[in-house]
Length: 252
Ligand SMILES: C[S@@+](CC[C@H](N)C(=O)[O-])C[C@H]1O[C@@H](n2cnc3c(N)ncnc32)[C@H](O)[C@@H]1O
Image 1: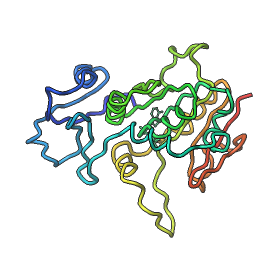
Image 2: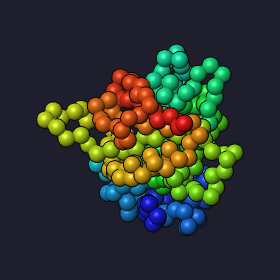
Image 3: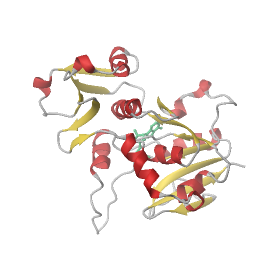
Image 4: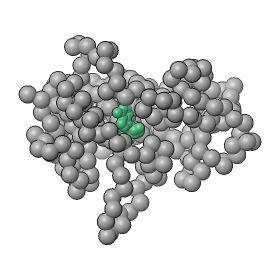
């Protein structure tokens, strides 16, 4: 993903835009944001807009998407997880006082990142799609948490990865194609349908996994649906949740 992806942004409430958004508009090397008048966009295409203190995405077919970290965090607090039994925590190697440094390389809605953070890991997250990244940057602005969200494909960082900042664990949850089969599964929740429309499929998952296996110090964890084949055969262990599986590749 080397060329800049164009994003349309409505001029609604432009005087109230937070500084990170102004900065993104001005940073033409990183973002290609075209500001249009609300009257012109008028709900006729997909675009970002700022309203009631929040950055939101308008999908012409699927409605509005906005990330709310406070709501997600409070949800996790209510769950009273027994971390030692949680498949994601087990896959990442979070137990007792062990707090591995995890890179969530596919931040998406931020829900898994918040869970990893809640489980107590040290965390850095990455998102390469500009519209999704801006929604995440706005979510963490409104509800600050102790991890960083980086606008990048981690596998393209090359020279900036040093022995000191190398992660113990790389977590990877790419977008997959819709399942085809005789039985039509229930439609994915609205957010994931918007993701399919905006981000599409991540075609580079096999290469990415090879990079991750050379970069993480101790393990790589890949999220899959329960029935999907592993991206790379023979994971060291797999941990099943209700509808997902975490394939863990230990680095020896
Ligand atoms: C299936 S979603 C991740 C869902 C996420 N785990 C959550 O909790 O919402 C995949 C996301 O990762 C991003 N992505 C995929 N490959 C990436 C990469 N190599 N670097 C950064 N972001 C990536 C996509 O743009 C998309 O937003």
